[in-house]
Length: 450
Image (cartoon, rainbow, N blue to C red; front, top):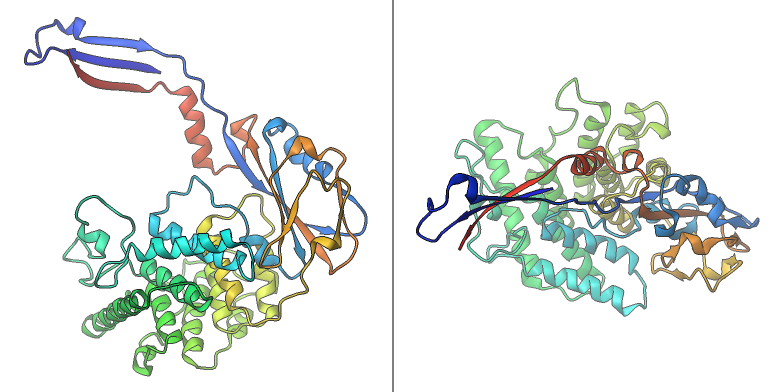
């Protein structure tokens, strides 16, 4: 790295000749190791002891520095695929606005702390609630973050271009925050009634704006957006949607163009079905899926993880049965990297809305560890068994077996320093940035007065 300073005397910027004003230093910089995280596909947990380290060595050897690798084990009965997929810690690299992060952390927290006697878990959820409420303005709108000065119009939801839709934007973040607050209140957490009431009034006004836009310009863009229909779903759940408003989305659905993949059209249809179902209409999500796909394993297969998680949540709100939900849920476990926070938040939302009977939970007593003093496993409030992070090097000759309880599966997440960033499981843009950072000299220039 090269550091260059331009030096000038106070009040006499040209006192020194140009060749003497510039001071340059060359510094050797060795980048820190790149830390990666991987989630391994689940494997059946049977009565025969499984050597944990041997299960992982094919991934660790030659890829990670073994001395830096930490492993977290999660285990659950078969049928708990959604809970397994939505578990985990938030990625510190997430650059979500504060409101978004609090909302999705809260959604996941509501799931993992369900029935939990751990006071700290419930305190974290309550802190998320209070953080979100602190971001609400007097008219009910939630701002994305706090600022020392005045908020910009766009931060309050106003469009910056007069030629655009004249209403307020940011409906998705407002609906998401409201959704979480309503759910938290239903779980017994302390939530301000004013916060919920003002937020409902805000999104009701935004839906009225969208309907007015459709009426004046015959424009379905706003009312048929996912954000608007998600907000309408919440209004329906709170008995704040009337039949005339519901009719406004009757024409929403299907892909925007013939070039869109089939799942985009299915996604839109499922959102509308969810709103109609929550209003009280009888809908048939099975017909939507079976018409679009040849077999269950194809359901929503060409959507990315985030949109698939949203679609799964819409299926749950449309009262889809377990046969429709299971193949989509299982697809989240067949992957080689962790899900991001907002995707896990939508999965947690799906779990909360499922009408199916929960499977028999796996208990710590159902497992046998050869060295239980090395690996500590706890029962979470939502039926998942989860270990504390344990060093890969400490797993030598440690085995785990299921000695009782339901048919189960194990799910490992490991993290550590990569040996070669070019072969990492990180997204290409992260690897590219890391590699170019090693090869490229960076020049820093500033003015110093003496």
